[in-house]
Amino acid sequence: MTKFFQPEIETASREEIRAIQNEKLVKQVKHVYENVKYYRDLMDEKGVTPDDIKSVDDIYKLPFLTKADLREAYPYGLLGTDLKNCVRIHATSGTTGKRVVAFYTQNDIELWDDCCARAIIAAGGSSEDICQVAYGYGLFTGGMGLHGGSQKVGCLTLPMSSGNTERQIEFMQDLHSTIICCTPSYAAYIGETLKEMGLTPDDIDLKAGIFGAEPWTEEMRRDIEKSLGIKAYDIYGLTESTGPGVAFECEAQTGMHINEDHFYAEIIDPETGEVLPEGSKGELVFTNLDKEGFPLLRYRTRDICVLSTEKCSCGRTLIKMAKPMGRSDDMLIIRGVNVFPSQIETVLIKEGYSPNYLIEVDRIKNNDTLDVYVELSPEQFSDTVKDISKNEKSLADAIIQMVGIKPKVHLVAPKTIKRSEGKAVRVIDKRKLHD
Image 1 (cartoon, rainbow, N blue to C red):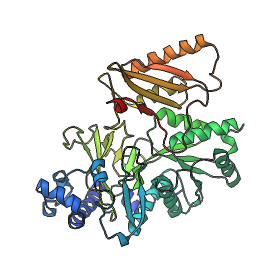
Image 2 (spheres, helix red, strand yellow):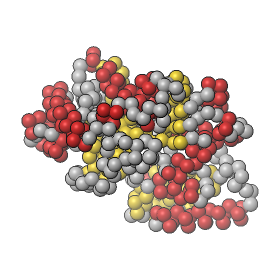
Image 3 (cartoon, rainbow, N blue to C red):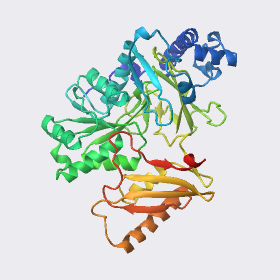
Image 4 (tube, rainbow, N blue to C red):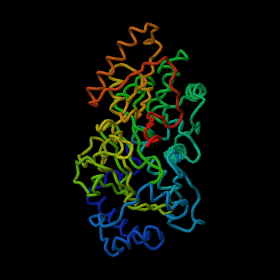
């Protein structure tokens, strides 16, 4: 089995990686300054010029970019090359305002495909595999990203997109798919549907799954692995930086290797913007070292995580990022307490409930309320109100132990909570509508 897609990069020494990053950053800063007026104005305002950037040690001198900047510059304000050089765009869903549109040259797509190919190889993929891509295709980056990586590896690629779950399973059976790529919530739904169809993991040939685009816990990983009979791998990316493949998990499953020849990562204090030392928990910031169409420098992802250069048993030397522990911008502050949805999900799965849940936060008479709706499995469902009330109280107590505040738990009937074939909606914060 091939272990690496590009071993010369994936196993390079830290010194070699740093040399690549230094060279690319100096070139990229000059390119951005000369071609992107929006960022040039930010640099001028901060009193920094390309000559001030001699290596990645100087990156702290550069201004940050945020999603607000991307919306303000929409659509062409951060374009890094002539539009005629671009061959594709992707965009975010636009759920909180204007869409963020990212541009790609042909070279950008080739490098993106390489990054996703590294992820597929790390998950045990090869040209012998049949890769079923069930991420959404279109403006969302998931489908096209893993599709390109799968073809680079030489897999037989099934561009299924999301939805029509029974047909997904029929194709898995008929074509003997070995790798599935989709969101973790959709993978869980496929596992659920498999069971409803009277099938078991023995009836399909899947061996691995590559899941990303939304937060998921270790407990959810184990649940998916069991329901589909696979090893589940995490993949990280964001449309602003390129899409899935910015970082990927290896067989060790102890964090995601960042493709450092294309992305320089920093951890900062989300309040002060100060760069924190390795091992510190903070906000993840990425710089595109060689993207031409949409070359973002010091983009604040809002994801909270930790970076580590500890030696990995897989042999890769690329720095690892921990699974994001939440986001600095969608962290819920309820009655003065910081609450991440992933904490509540961890409790639900530990207590034996499904990962189909909805967190609803509201403010009534100046008091924050926290309601957690949890879907019961058919086996758990009971018409006995007494049992349901008792179980709701027990689960509420477990959540208090984890997050420190008391929720109102609602155990609801199977299939009550709306399923998602893309990113699952886990939180509704009604306070934003009132404030």
